[in-house]
Amino acid sequence: MLIKWGSIVVKGSGKLGGHVFSSGPGGASMHTLARTRNPQTKYQMAIRARFTLLSQGWRDLTESQRESWYGAESEFSRSNRFGDTVLLSGKNLYNALNAQRLIIGLQIVVVAPLPTTLDTALITQADIRESAGIFIIRGRFAQSKKYIVVATPSLSQGVNSFNDKFKIIGIVLSSFSGTDIGSFSDNYNKYVDVFGVPKGGSKIFVGLYSINSSGQKAIISSSKVNIQTF
Image 1 (tube, rainbow, N blue to C red):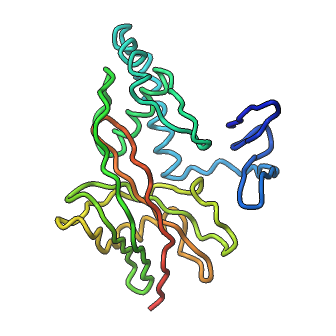
Image 2: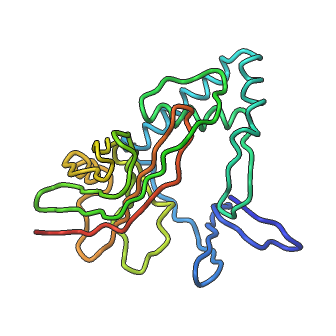
């Protein structure tokens, strides 16, 4: 739960007890959190496995290694959903950077790294061609760079807030020209594994971002997907 305090509460976002707080064009809103069962999906199990691995890793660090993470807190400041600058604690910084490194196949680092440059992508077109079973993503990307692809489930046409619905469906490599991610049947199949076959009359959003060697995550570039049935 994220709350911004003024003389009274002025903004709220996230979960609190059995309720969810959010804001949109119509103003702030609150609704009851729908509790679901705990399905053992591959996506959830991968997240839990990373969390367990990192929790154990933090406990195994030496005191000097932990001090490196405490000392790096100010080097990795970030903005929250309200645009305020926040600092992660040493432990949370260790977890955040190493979780991203694991996603792209890098090993856990025990000493805090230095911030490095991030490659920011820009999606200009995204298509799903159901008949061919492929995902197509085009835009401006760094050449021969790995990007994490995220997507939403099929959403109703009235839904415009979707960033909290993104889930990772795959990792792709940009073309040498840096303008095309190309056609990927494997990512379409991964989408179906996570969300099921896209529903007719719905809308889907896709996004992608890069992760650098320090474990920093770039801003997600997203686009509405054109669903083609031919």
